[in-house]
Length: 452
Image (tube, rainbow, N blue to C red):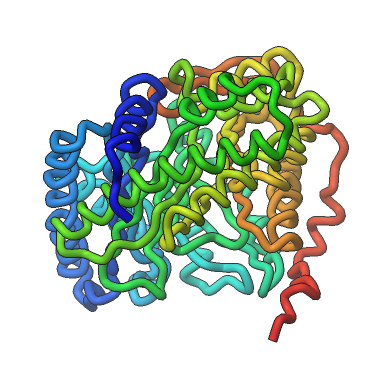
């Protein structure tokens, strides 16, 4: 479908006035054929494989920015889940060395983040998977660009509580070892993780993908808010239609950039992720969109309905614009990375319980939130299990990016800076589910998984 002059002018206005950007260009790279019995040769192969592709990604991305004038904010790499390529090199020292290799390759090529240091454990843990989890505090605290993930549940497999029960302690160790607990911001645990997600920290190159695939993440909360601001009196049906049309235009711009970049690099074009991703910049807030709907402050009663309306319209608009919509494709509501979310938590409008209810209709889950450092690891495990159960039962992707802040209490503010923003420490229910979680085992898959 060709672009007409009016659509070009509208897109230019979105870029100049409403913070439209390409939030992430993420190149997925297969590392399975780098495996070597000689670990030094293995690491060297991984390094040069990544550097070769990543350097070209950076160069071609910068060329497209100059050509079209649209900001491309992050250049990222996602690799084959590391647990799959480390089976024959299963020692803590070698896992750490592989993490440092990935970090060096990303740094030397000018890449912002590299994802894939993780494992798919939704039905069980191998010895290699357990070793990876044990070494994560060292890897996340001693690298700058490496991001990690675990997929511990799916609608088909259920939820692996034995894996979940390893995470509270791991996160508390990571927080203690890394400055300002920032290592925890580079780890996400999923249910129903997509294999083509371009956003960090959860990006990885799925086992069903080709050798390389380019995935694009777009973002336009400011564009959507502008449309809502101009239509204060319309009913929900009309409002949904306006948002849908806006996301249609945003998605078209993202696919244009993605296809041209993939062609220039001679790699497969994967997907456009149409998620509305916030930053702390003024006018770039998903919470701001919800409040423009007529919600006094996100977290008030009615917020779940508002998020559901937004999600529904975003998905329909993206699907209408492209046959290659994928990844998470919905609405992010990270606490620390959205100025409106930070304000709502700080003012008491939004608590952890309400945030969890919002995630039942948003695309990602409990994202970038902090809890007091003295919260027991069993409680952290329970928070994670609750959120992922929503994904398993409702056949949707949910994730958790949780930061236990050493020495901090509910109400404290912690400044991360940059893309990670500022995080208010949230109050946690003081009652325990320890005896329930220590049963372990696996939450069985729901009956809705029986679709054959």
